[in-house]
Image (tube, rainbow, N blue to C red; front, side, top):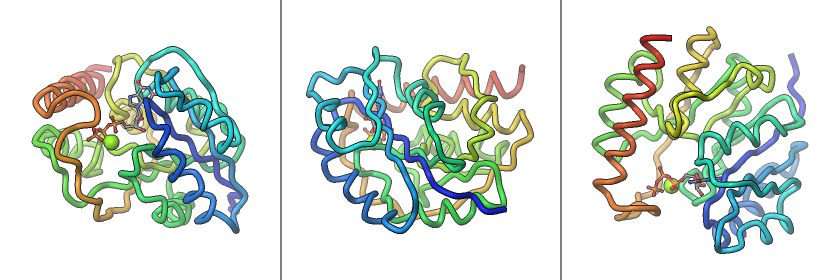
Length: 216
Ligand SMILES: Nc1nc2c(ncn2[C@@H]2O[C@H](COP(=O)(O)OP(=O)(O)OP(=O)(O)O)[C@@H](O)[C@H]2O)c(=O)[nH]1
Ligand SMILES: [Mg+2]
């Protein structure tokens, strides 16, 4: 089956400077592929939306609901049969997008997993939920989806940094594949909040995702 065209979805919270670099970079990598770029911004105080409106094909501003809900919101707006989700903060290198597009031909969802997970909470995620789902990086939101999977996603767990989407995918019997890439060095401190807080938020997200996986 030929899958023609790709919708790139990114969510933003104060990413004005980053999307100025990211969007032209994505367009360059996808210059021979039909594509659209969708930015879902939760009304960032730095004015990300103004930059997004200039550079993206579709820029949506809405109230703050977190990354997972933003991703799903953007994916529902996508017009092409393949959807790639990517973080806006330059931690996901768009040069891996062609590989994601290639691999989605044999799967429903492909996760671009980081070879090394920097946080202890992410490592715990790998050894628990990751084992159950068959991917090493359950919190990587650098992923490709077939568009027809999107209507199956209904988020109930609150913010799970994308893990709940994979849990639902597994429950629905979608075929989940993976590519593994060497990530750039992680910044010392999380972009939002401190290190301990970041770990605790991820552990909480993991707990909720495991409960959804085991109970529902
Ligand atoms: N729309 C929206 N996007 C968000 C929100 N929080 C984070 N994001 C975006 O989601 C992506 C990942 O967020 P990060 O804060 O970088 O999360 P992370 O990569 O796990 O953590 P860091 O180590 O700090 O980079 C980025 O593109 C953010 O701008 C939010 O509340 N709403
Ligand atoms: Mg980040």
